[in-house]
Length: 388
Image 1 (tube, helix red, strand yellow):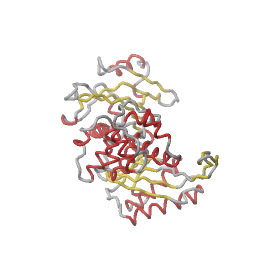
Image 2 (image 1 turned 90 degrees about the vertical axis):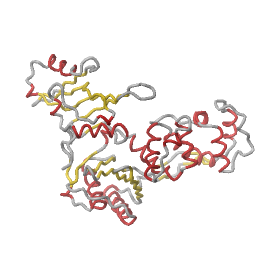
Image 3 (image 1 turned 180 degrees about the vertical axis):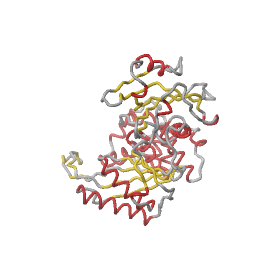
Image 4 (image 1 turned 60 degrees about the vertical axis):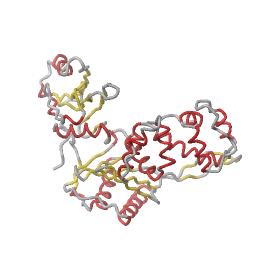
């Protein structure tokens, strides 16, 4: 999702009429007539933009960067999800607009109330699956999202980081519902930074207090807490315990670490059985990579094969290259999958998704769209165990 932002590139991707409306709402550049300017010849708009003050440009660039970040397939999906939670089917309206930037800009102007949650969802979706840490809860307790509970979580996170690491003096938590998942975005205060910047014509090094981000995703149906944060294993465990206690009312013994979330043993033999319903849109599932650990040693073997001509190509390669190693002495520690979906009704094109699962609990899948469909297939196939 990340890409280089520049005002020129942004102006080139959005309709001039939307830019004019945006500027008018902020009482700037109203003397300029953008109606006769070609959508791709944005130099007059850029020159007019340069006449604004640094403060005006700074505030607007913040908006433009947020719009640019959501101007992608994942961003529009996040917007639609948030609108659906509010009872509005937005997909049809957005289909009338051309291009991701036009869709995102229209939402920013017309449905700004969806913006904070959609931005947060899009940011969470962009995080690689291997960076999430998961645990299971022993009961499917509902998440408590009332204001008092959220303020309590803010205080506990603030106290934890301030007493342990000397940061986190302040903390803000936003919570949103997305389908059957509860998202919690926490922003504790980080260590102060000396920023190097210009304020008008003055060069300064002011102290800044940025926030660092912690994301909790709770699935009541699956009895699962997913955590994203930077830190060591023990810190993550303690932060998750604070969340479970405050939001779910669970004590430490009522949720368990997932030392082995994924079971890769069903993939040891040829023609593994992948279970998925016809309406899932999945056409086929194939394995294209194995990483094998030689038991009792530090040796690893990585194999890759193209399953397009033969679904069992990776097994044929394994048996050929590892024929002198007994199967009982090899353990699969990583698998690369390729999932092909039925062709699009309009374009006739096939879509595929490649991802890796690494033992014990690392998966590069996200939690939305087709990735959510694939995760269900993994559960139904016994690869990702369902919580009991």
